[in-house]
Length: 219
Image (cartoon, rainbow, N blue to C red; front, side, top):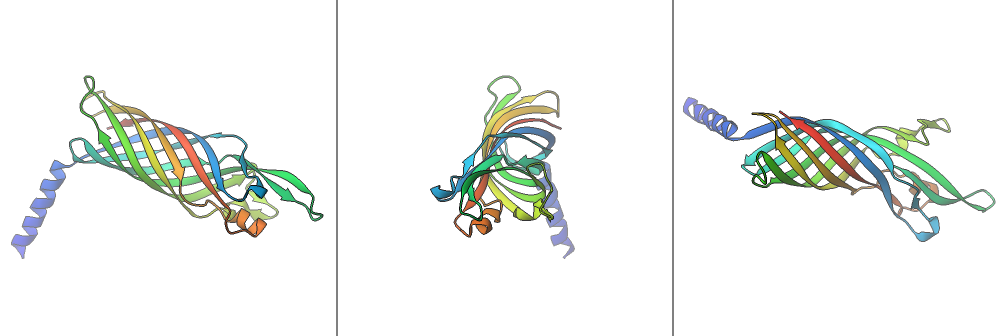
């Protein structure tokens, strides 16, 4: 039994020594918007894109020289102003607008593919995968409470999105790297059930979209 235990410890230590883990900080200003699945009669539209911020820790786990599993923990804002057709008690139609702002804790689960050096100390990378997001705060029209009800309750707790991006990484020292890139975040799940309940239509869904500029420093 002792021999087996020692062998397992030796293999784990050997694997850990061969693996390379890089940890860093990332800042991601994001142009955030929404898209919709709904019948035309509701006339859901994106009024504008909003600037949101993402910040957090990134971890690149290299399982081969040019391939890394990339994860981390990000605090990321999403949402934008949307409009739709509503009606009053008399059946009169009017346009309603909601400015959605939701904050999530994001767990990215992606694969990074690195090129060989395209210039001294310079690599290009491509990133693909997804993310799991947990709601932590929310506002609508800059309000946290509407009609005596907390706004955060109208949004679903979890959200998932697909991630596709790329960028460039520079070696600045023996163990210090800086990177910059562009990432597209496409929401895969409905962010709330508010509009389904409001109109009595289960086919309505609102999803997040965003494009972020990523800047970071790895150690």
